[in-house]
Length: 115
Length: 114
Image (cartoon, rainbow over all chains, first blue to last red; front, top):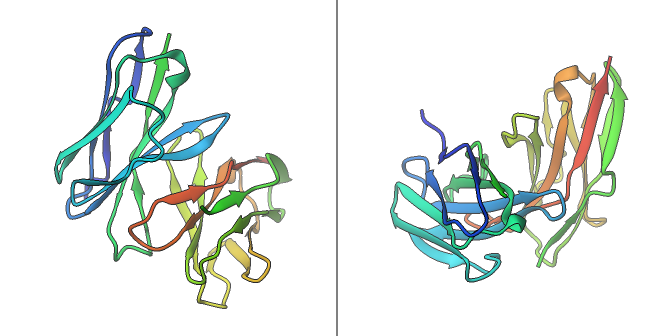
């Protein structure tokens, strides 16, 4: 049973470039979450979707960040233009409302480095 | 908004000993869920244990157990018979209910030494 799949696993790019992170949730899960992990701020929610609709995007830092979920099996997080302070590990997680035993299944994360 | 506080940035324990990681939280909810996640150097997020606020009995999973004090809003994790593989970051997390996001503490880095 495939888990949450994120790509790429590592991304190194130069400041100003566009970055796209991808996520494939577990089939049948109707919630999808994007989290960011940094040393300073820990793990914080950026945005989450329910049935492909954004529910809470209050954690999205600024207009340079955007997230989409065009269908139930795919989501992207885009940063344009990227800045060094965006360097972090970005996690995607998916879950269902009936999943209190394992509320969210996490992908392995994308480590993003902006030079 | 719910806040989760882990007051111990780093801890160390010898193999086979017992260690307790602290977590407090703030919420006005009466029913909610609490979790401990483990993040080894591989950066996977691994669910260790969960507690539902309406259950008075403390959760236990093998060597891992919690001390849930609802009135004090405290949720500590006890690891018994520590093993080298327990070395990791441990995050305490709060969830209002399924379908909501997780609120994480800043984490405790645990080192298990031989």
